[in-house]
Image (cartoon, rainbow, N blue to C red; front, side, top):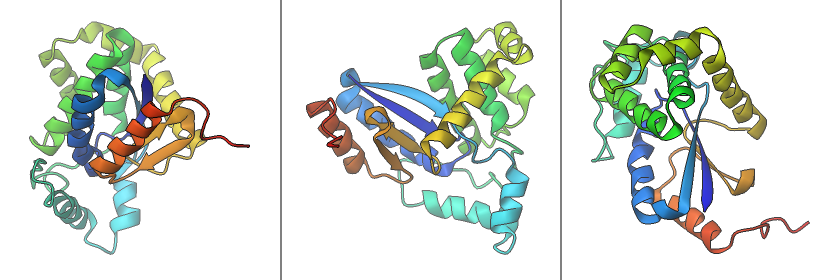
Length: 216
């Protein structure tokens, strides 16, 4: 069994594009791999990010155009043109917080599945998933116990788990979203990684487990 530590931000277009590849990897190698989902701070402060990186390139409208352009070459990916134009989430942190709360109060698999629900809500349905009220409505619609979720948010347990993710990403030198950390941290695949590359690396590690990567 190979563990894949998967770091992403729910507002990242490349993590949304990667979803199809991740699902295909599960179909091909699912019985041999275990995913551990972690979240990173890419869109922690959206306004400052856009102001800094897109101030001279059209601001939000320029970024929206970039997102649509990035997605157009992937026929399996749906992206509404309302995101970043009409709907501008202020942060990804609230979504990550709720996901960690669900992981604590329900289980990791249901949390990972809900992460996909949140991505669909944003990229397809243009819902503002930075809004905590919207997040809790979506959680209720997916049969989560809202009382339990609120409890671990209010007592700090959920934010503590989220901070652990953010700190682990910094310690590992994670450059962005999505990132696949393999072989106990020896190998990291980052960004728009093609399916064949992803599959080949995972399959090679499954064929040759252990410490062969370390020669000295």
